[in-house]
Image (cartoon, rainbow, N blue to C red):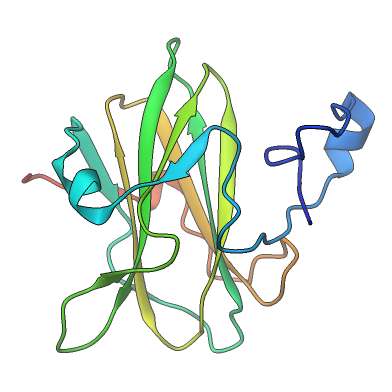
Length: 167
């Protein structure tokens, strides 16, 4: 089981400052979610009210992509619940949620988490982040393998996520 400092096994020791600075993000199996996260039924996810929805909009993954990594940082002073969904956008058809589907995670103030989804390059994807605070900062990138080494030009920074104007 591969883990990083955000998704370490419950029985592992807490990484010290020196260790966390050199920790490398790795993909995890689709069935393995970040700490304090759980997959939602799509109907329940759609019915859960949130104030804000941020989206990458559709973006094409480079051909050599093996994984999409997303991360969210809670810069709010209060605990925040966040919902993240990775969609595959097939041309001429409705977009579909990629496994594991919508993921909901609760973040303490100043806490960050991530998850890496399997993804094939040369397809369009969208990442949606639903939350109740404007101090939630998302991030996304494409990886060529199973270690956090973003493909140049594939990073979507917080400032590039756009807030949907309509519900």
